[in-house]
Image 1 (cartoon, rainbow, N blue to C red):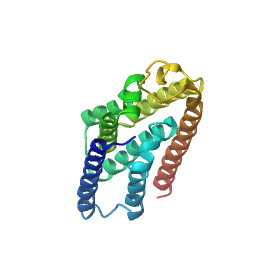
Image 2 (tube, rainbow, N blue to C red):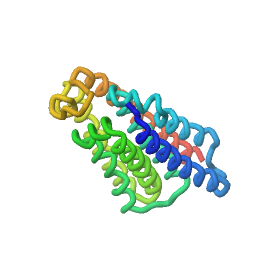
Image 3 (tube, rainbow, N blue to C red):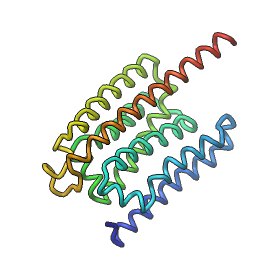
Image 4 (cartoon, one colour):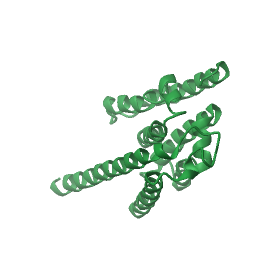
Length: 215
């Protein structure tokens, strides 16, 4: 549950996101090619999970917690890709939060303690921004390798969740509220989201190829 101390941290977290969004909106004037609908979509991804109601649910429901990870990382990627220009180093740094926060102990620390939750949210969002800002500067080969590694890692974690692996539950870490029976639905949701992402990537690649061919 949120106590008054954690509420202050929550407000601090919100203000940080607002500051980032404000800077992005200022930069919007310099980015005529961005669609307003995309900015709205990013705000929905953030506000949909960074709010007291959902934050409290995530202490007890790993599905919402995992969906938040996808949501904030995706929001960061979209913003970074639109407004910033990164490099290979930022690409690597951007990947790290997505990897670190899905090992058992960091995963459950973020799920169970508000201070770690704030840290996970900020680093996942910023990591997404770094990754998104670097997508135009890395080679197609690196993109394919990174995508393949993500698919492999996500698939392995999904399978572990489907089988209710105890290392992500209170059977190994008593401070957690998550139980093994809660994990299978998380694994299934991850597989569905992965397939949606892959389908969208294929759509974008094919569309781009057709436009270049017909143009």
